[in-house]
Image (cartoon, rainbow, N blue to C red; front, side):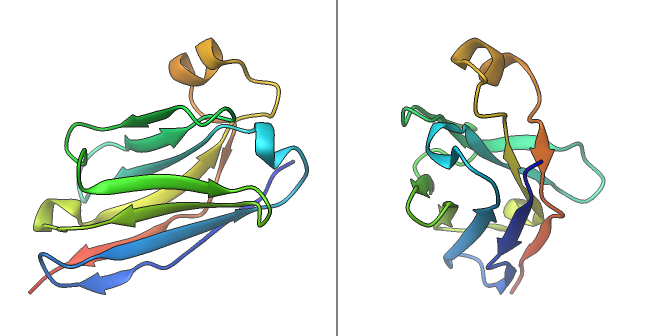
Length: 125
C-alpha cells in the first residue's frame, strides 16, 4: 500500500505561482509513475500532469507551458510547479500513483492505483 501526502496548496492571486509537493510512502518510488489530477468546482477530475518512472512527461493542454512536474527520487517526492495561475486553475489537486510494476501502456490507459487526499488551490484576486 502506498500513501500519498500533498502539501503546498493555498490561496494565490492571478498571475502568481505555486509549487505543490507530494511525498509517497513505500518502496520502488523511482520506478513508479506519478501524476497530479485536479477537480474544479462542479466539474470532473482531470489529469494535469504525469511523469513515468523513466521520466516521460505528459501535460493537459490547459497547463502546457505553465506547469512542470518533476520527481525527486531521493526524497520520494513529486512536485507540480504552476506559474501564471488563472481563475480556472482553482481546484482540489490530487497526487496519484501507479503500482511500481505498471508498464507505460497501463499508465496511459488506466486510472492510478493510489490517491492522495487532495489539497485546495484557490486563485482569486
